[in-house]
Amino acid sequence: MIITQSMHKTCIVPESMGIFMQQFFHQKTTQFFLTVLATYLFMKYLSPFVTPFLVAFLIVWAMNPYIERVHQKTRFKKSFVAGLLLTIWVILFIWILWIFSFAVMNGGGDLFSRIPAYFSDWETALSCCCDNLEKLFGLNGQKLQCFVVQQIAVFTDNFQTNIMPVVMGKSVTYMKGIVSCFAFLAVVFIAVMLLVKDYGEIARKLETPEFRGIREVFRKVVVYLKTFLRAQFIILLIISVLCAVTLSLIGMTGAVFYGFLTGFMDMLPFIGTGIMLLPLAVIYFFTGEYRKAIVCVGLYALCALIREMLEPRLIGDKVGIWPIGILFSVFAGVHLFGVAGVIKGPLSLVIICETLKFLWYDRRKEK
Image (cartoon, rainbow, N blue to C red; front, top):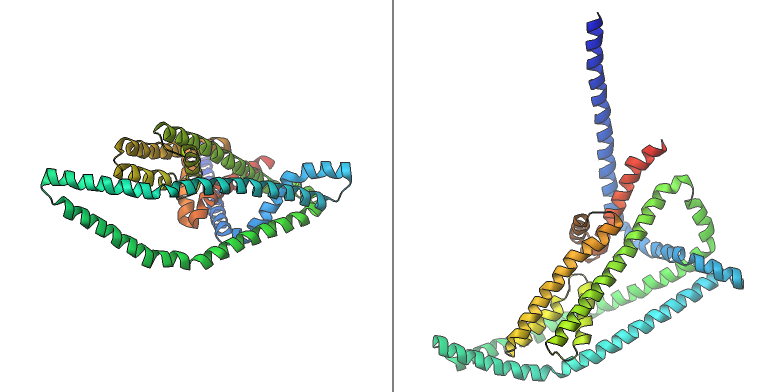
């Protein structure tokens, strides 16, 4: 009888443990897939409508200590203080943008003014290249040069007749994008004015235990955004200085401007340093400056390597996510959300990780 009871107990314990573990993992799996699905639907369909108000809330959250300080000293209305601070920031932003645009126009004008000289050097290099081919392989250098020039003329013709009208035909789309951008900024400005009045009450409600999960996710998203902007600034500075110094060493005119413009282009998704350095390498190659062309290609590879190495480390280490996770989220985000996926992908990963952390660990600690 004792043996039977002990055997019965040993059978019940593993069986009950198995049921518990099965229910536990089933619950975790369900929560995981629901969290991923909800995050995807939010980023895909709701974020365009909610983003202006989230940006406004972030601005008010960041400005609130300064608004309170000025309000207590001057007794001005909070909405007036917020509007004044926003106006100052907008003026500073426009001033910096105007200085940058002025530098781009001056540097770009200087670059374009040298294009005829580049074409003249290119024609000389092409003639020498065709003569060398004639000597090495017995080809007719004159005919080869005429053929290449003819193909370039055909390409230029097609560019003017087919590609340029399509590009110019998109001007309405570009104007719509500019109008949408200004409308977005206007909605953010108005939302900030309205949120300032009720921010204290909203903040008090969000401090209640019911919103603890939202607070944790929001805090982590803010940390990611700050880390992302800081990382982009560091990479921009490193690549800009590297390009400016390298191009100066090979004797390029306007190297400092071109280097910093290259760093700025590298920050833009799907553009990168290649749009600046590879055409420059081609120009140097056709003008017979092969050493400079090789340096430009090597500089392009080095800049790409720097971004690939630094970006996941600067972002992943600070946010608490492995660098490979950040890289995967960017790759998946681009496929799911397009160009905006460069931001939406990592943000989605942060939201999913923090939500699951709250559901699986923090809530269990509360119980």
